[in-house]
Image (cartoon, rainbow, N blue to C red; front, side, top):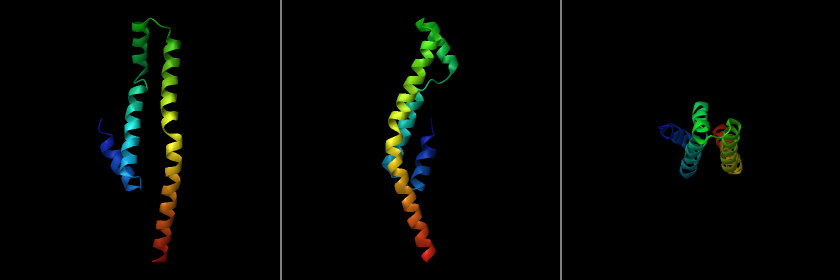
Length: 97
Protein backbone atom coordinates (compact mmCIF):
# COMPACT_ATOMS: atom_id res chain seq x y z
CA UNK A 1 0.00 0.00 0.00
CA UNK A 2 2.87 2.39 0.59
CA UNK A 3 5.23 1.24 -2.13
CA UNK A 4 4.71 4.45 -4.13
CA UNK A 5 6.26 6.53 -1.36
CA UNK A 6 9.50 4.61 -1.98
CA UNK A 7 9.49 3.96 -5.70
CA UNK A 8 8.38 7.36 -7.00
CA UNK A 9 11.18 9.35 -5.26
CA UNK A 10 13.70 6.70 -6.32
CA UNK A 11 12.62 6.98 -9.95
CA UNK A 12 12.79 10.77 -9.80
CA UNK A 13 16.34 10.59 -8.37
CA UNK A 14 17.59 8.47 -11.26
CA UNK A 15 16.16 10.83 -13.85
CA UNK A 16 12.56 9.96 -14.62
CA UNK A 17 10.08 12.82 -14.84
CA UNK A 18 7.61 13.16 -11.97
CA UNK A 19 4.57 12.49 -14.14
CA UNK A 20 6.19 9.40 -15.65
CA UNK A 21 7.13 7.99 -12.23
CA UNK A 22 3.56 8.49 -11.04
CA UNK A 23 2.18 6.83 -14.16
CA UNK A 24 4.44 3.80 -13.75
CA UNK A 25 3.37 3.45 -10.13
CA UNK A 26 -0.30 3.72 -11.10
CA UNK A 27 0.11 1.05 -13.78
CA UNK A 28 1.92 -1.25 -11.36
CA UNK A 29 -0.75 -0.77 -8.70
CA UNK A 30 -3.48 -1.53 -11.22
CA UNK A 31 -1.58 -4.64 -12.28
CA UNK A 32 -1.45 -5.74 -8.67
CA UNK A 33 -5.23 -5.71 -8.60
CA UNK A 34 -5.55 -7.54 -11.91
CA UNK A 35 -2.96 -10.22 -11.13
CA UNK A 36 -4.36 -12.91 -8.85
CA UNK A 37 -3.22 -12.29 -5.30
CA UNK A 38 -2.73 -15.94 -4.49
CA UNK A 39 -3.43 -19.37 -5.85
CA UNK A 40 -5.63 -20.03 -2.81
CA UNK A 41 -7.91 -17.21 -3.97
CA UNK A 42 -8.18 -18.88 -7.36
CA UNK A 43 -9.30 -22.06 -5.60
CA UNK A 44 -12.11 -20.16 -3.92
CA UNK A 45 -13.09 -18.71 -7.32
CA UNK A 46 -13.35 -22.25 -8.68
CA UNK A 47 -15.71 -23.24 -5.88
CA UNK A 48 -17.76 -20.05 -6.07
CA UNK A 49 -18.14 -19.96 -9.87
CA UNK A 50 -18.35 -23.74 -10.40
CA UNK A 51 -15.89 -23.50 -13.29
CA UNK A 52 -12.98 -25.90 -13.93
CA UNK A 53 -9.66 -24.89 -12.31
CA UNK A 54 -7.86 -24.84 -15.67
CA UNK A 55 -10.31 -22.24 -17.00
CA UNK A 56 -9.68 -19.97 -14.02
CA UNK A 57 -5.89 -20.35 -14.37
CA UNK A 58 -5.97 -19.55 -18.10
CA UNK A 59 -8.14 -16.49 -17.47
CA UNK A 60 -5.80 -15.28 -14.70
CA UNK A 61 -2.69 -15.72 -16.84
CA UNK A 62 -4.29 -14.06 -19.88
CA UNK A 63 -5.44 -10.96 -18.03
CA UNK A 64 -2.05 -10.61 -16.31
CA UNK A 65 -0.10 -10.82 -19.58
CA UNK A 66 -2.50 -8.49 -21.38
CA UNK A 67 -2.08 -5.85 -18.70
CA UNK A 68 1.68 -5.94 -18.18
CA UNK A 69 2.68 -6.43 -21.82
CA UNK A 70 0.13 -3.89 -22.98
CA UNK A 71 1.26 -1.14 -20.62
CA UNK A 72 5.00 -1.33 -20.41
CA UNK A 73 7.26 -2.24 -23.34
CA UNK A 74 6.86 0.64 -25.78
CA UNK A 75 6.54 3.38 -23.21
CA UNK A 76 9.65 2.37 -21.30
CA UNK A 77 12.02 1.71 -24.21
CA UNK A 78 12.33 5.33 -25.33
CA UNK A 79 12.67 6.60 -21.78
CA UNK A 80 15.51 4.19 -20.98
CA UNK A 81 17.48 5.44 -23.96
CA UNK A 82 17.00 9.07 -22.91
CA UNK A 83 18.13 8.33 -19.36
CA UNK A 84 21.24 6.48 -20.56
CA UNK A 85 22.11 9.39 -22.85
CA UNK A 86 21.58 11.86 -20.00
CA UNK A 87 23.81 9.82 -17.66
CA UNK A 88 26.50 9.54 -20.35
CA UNK A 89 26.48 13.32 -20.87
CA UNK A 90 26.69 13.86 -17.12
CA UNK A 91 29.75 11.56 -16.87
CA UNK A 92 31.44 13.37 -19.76
CA UNK A 93 30.90 16.72 -18.06
CA UNK A 94 32.40 15.38 -14.83
CA UNK A 95 35.48 14.09 -16.70
CA UNK A 96 36.04 17.54 -18.23
CA UNK A 97 36.17 19.12 -14.77
